[in-house]
Length: 530
Image 1 (cartoon, one colour):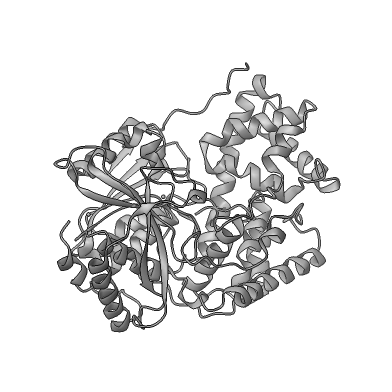
Image 2: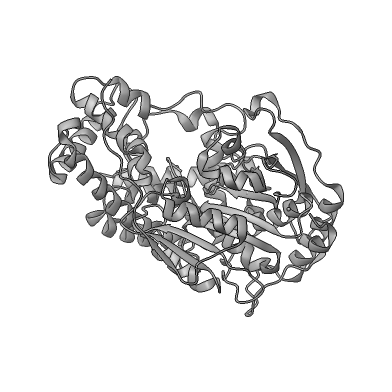
């Protein structure tokens, strides 16, 4: 899950016998896990059959989508409401690049979701055009297919506020100093929920993870695939788990990387509270790293000194926004990249180091609001709207402010890095103006092939316990643990112990006889000064 204001908990990545697979009824595992009953099951079966017949009209992508040849784009029509498959339709944008190997090497398509909710997967085919070496072997065998989930980007995008207003800053400090500060944030959250209803109310009841999973099954059919190959990262792991629950017999191969805890009691309120704890852990990891390389960064030679510098920086930005643009909220949005991704460790440290040396420019350029981020259908406002809409619709959230206040006040005492920011981001769900469903009971005990689960032990955005829980629920799955590591999105890191197993699984369907623990990928080091 990816967040910037955004999972949440913010951060934050997808085959050819035709009609037989499309017409197979979506199967729920024992216990009737599937929500919505027979109406949705009949609806997705009908929509998939129609999509299999229609296919996808692949064309060169529109110039302003930033997807160059030979990537092609198209649309798949799906019902807004699967209980009413003959009712209103929406369009789901998809793109693809063909496999780079021979016709004999081709194994179909692999569909990708990068997380969010609210993330676009349309850049997935660029892993081929940019010749990403980690994916070269897989690209020989598969067409790489990306898509914008419903409500995202080019797929009937939703909105909650004016994009120009959304990006303006500096925003309020997310850490409240008083009850008055909390009242201001509560009003902002309530107004945001009202804005979602006003601007996109017709979509909100249907912005659920199960509906997006149904959309994926229709995409599968439109691609001409009997079974689905899928890679999901972050929130994409929850989407994959829901798909595996609804359509276990439609899965061929599935990788889930950096796993959302799928337990019903975790979706989504508790998952966000758990994330606050995990972020503090990974923030502490990064502070140790910064202290280790104090000779390069001059921020502090102990984690305690680094923390003190952070508190001093926040206080200074609160008193007077840096460059008139970067306050505490903008600082947090930038600095939280370090707990998310090891690849951001040096960037964040370098910008901070330059600031302390008297050069504000790198920090301002990295953290200031991007006023150009309002154009087209991929603006951050859209991503934030989808994040909120899906998490609010997927589960029944607490409506009592006293509970939110109690839980977050308690957590903030020991885990201050993210707690209040996370609370305000999710608080619109307390006054949501659309139906909220009971979360799906994720799991499959028959009909599902082995699913490969990949997880870093110290992941901040999706704590490790989530991978263990999903592993229990998907019978026959295999768990690869990256020990003593915490980057979000393990399959994008260079770690042969993991990379080779991902290739073996996607290319040959091979999994280890038992779960595997891998050592960590290489820890970043300060870049040499030029």
